[in-house]
Length: 113
Image (cartoon, rainbow, N blue to C red; front, top):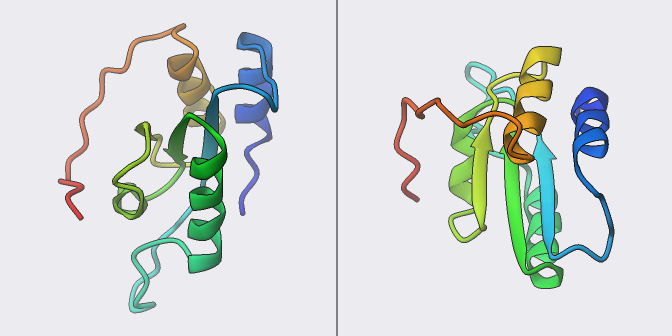
């Protein structure tokens, strides 16, 4: 869900992408809505990430929305929270993942399950 074409293009420009790689980067979007009763991804999307964990040595989940969705994946290799789908967030996430810039932010919430 969401348009993450800039993120994908930035990753492709900065890293060698391969389906045979040992690390899998999964980008997710989730915008909580007031009174919707949901704080995370739908189970079908969670299951797809669990399947990737079985296939790849390391899985990194990038959230382009609420950091709360990262609670659903306590056993992945890493997390990145970009908070939004805007072009600047997508570029920054790709640059950080590929080592072009440093991670400097801190989450304002705890992600304990």
